[in-house]
Image 1: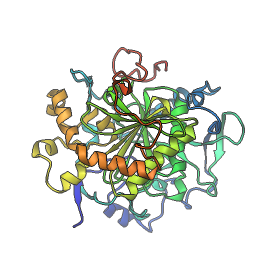
Image 2 (image 1 turned 135 degrees about the vertical axis):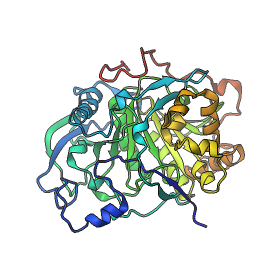
Image 3 (image 1 turned 90 degrees about the vertical axis):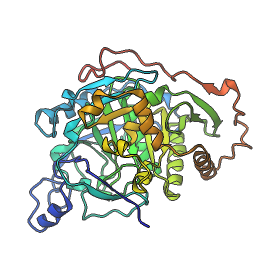
Length: 437
């Protein structure tokens, strides 16, 4: 039996249309200044070349000061430029936002602008790996005005910025674009090798690229997230999301229990006392070591058809891997009508504790217990989570019982404090006033 759910798709581009509209427009000419052959020749876009320090450098070394202010000047500066040009569907900075009282500090946002008066679409949720389908919306169809810059490893041993670089189809550049239905200030999409039309599945190179972006931002309030198919990704074209929110996420406060440390120096822990079970990866001798361990874990989940979400936190130094089953339960009719009525799709941001609510009554009545109840439905059972963890460890050639770095669960392996307490800020988001990392 094929499992499907119905949901209203989020519009991430002003050129995203219903499938019927898309079919009706075929053959009528483009005229949208897109990234396909009809419009690409002669196109230019700023190119940010990050200093590739992967080999022989620690993760901490990745965040050394850059001569270019990547986050404020480039990402947020270009994002604000597109905001002033009216490219967003609504003003996300005007959305009501509050911290829900309680020990974890879940963040609730009322975002009625994301919910379109548009028919729900069926999404298959029982197949994490699906082939790319060029007839459906993908990021080659966005208008070039929605693109901010190209993001690639520098060919020199230093950061470089080319304000007017050609878009080279032969190299299939990785690009950063706005999300026209933003969840927060600075909400962007990182699209690796956009012209290769890769399906939504993580590989080593793309995940390393995402870690480089987090490291370049060098600010713990700028995080990247990933949703697999079956875990509320709705566009089957490889992409990560990212945005800036000046508050610590509840998931970042959750205590952890160290399981083991890999030969490459990556510490793997299990989250405790949080409604969604997950693994936390940090450390590593190099940024590439960390990226490889996490991406290989993601590949294992993909190949075993297990939906999952990923949060890249703390400037790329801490990564949460979160297998989930909410969409499967929803398709099987196992989620209560009360939860379904909220129309909340628990993807990476919701699981991390940023609850994007579409109804005023849910926002006004938001409690920690309600957030916990929703997220508890997302989580695998304890037994299933341990099975999945064993699958991952087998895939990354890590036998915990034999690993000399493995722990026995003793109290000294329990980390009950946030890894780096973040500075308190006045209000939830400072928007253009950046918070020091």
